[in-house]
Image 1: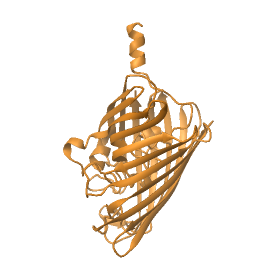
Image 2: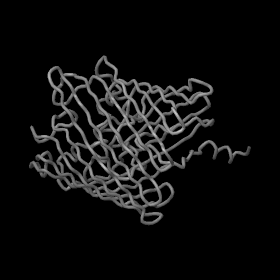
Image 3: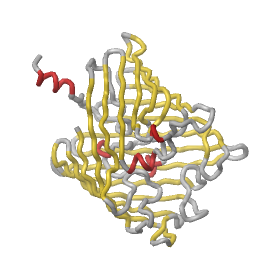
Image 4: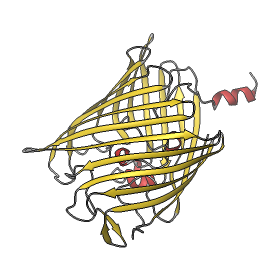
Length: 361
């Protein structure tokens, strides 16, 4: 084997000819190989016409800075894979990390993923992984290049983007996979109480075009409006379709937060469609609705209003090269109550334009 062949094998990336479950970047498979190096840079500029005084777009952790050129997320990851062991380390940087990991200890804030896994049985594809894991919840994750719309929906911004704990993954059939989780809590590396939470993920791939995904979560968590810890129950379902010139994903979820006397719910629904115009150009439209009227996950910045919001996004995507993507998107959010600020005055709407140049290897 010559040196050039060895380098290409070392840096090769396995490409699947089926629809990908994009909310998770934990795509290590059981192919016998050594180390894969991967890199990603998502640069952006966003202008919110409400002109937030502190330049933070409210209620967002992704592409959240107003009127400045910045990096949403950049990382260089290492992935090791052999027949019985695997490991993944993905240190990351950017405004997404600053906003989403602010509660974590300083030495852990820059870890998008860091986990190790062992194949439990020689003749069965059953894996146990432990560490900081990517999250299966909702139909969008932090890696924008994998998604039909550039910005993240409110649904994705208000479920865990990462989990800290252990995951048991196993195929039930050729088309059906199950993942079981034991984690510190609802998106937390630092355990905020002495209780552990549990989750599940069921993936069904009837063919190479469709993916159906059902997730659950149960654990003792704190609601923002009521600091008393209570039991949280959560379930989401999403589907993904990809064939020819049309790609589509849709997600619904429903959660219940209980305390000693009452229980409160939050829920959402979204649908995102992308249409390929040419080999390089595609357009995207997203409709979303998010209701957290009881302040379980989101507290309005304008006082005792209810967080109930409808949104529509329209974007264009230009594939400059095989691994370079330019995107622009306009996003309008319209709320039932005045939960936004426009020049420090409460308002019911928010509109932002966002552009991105993203590259990866």
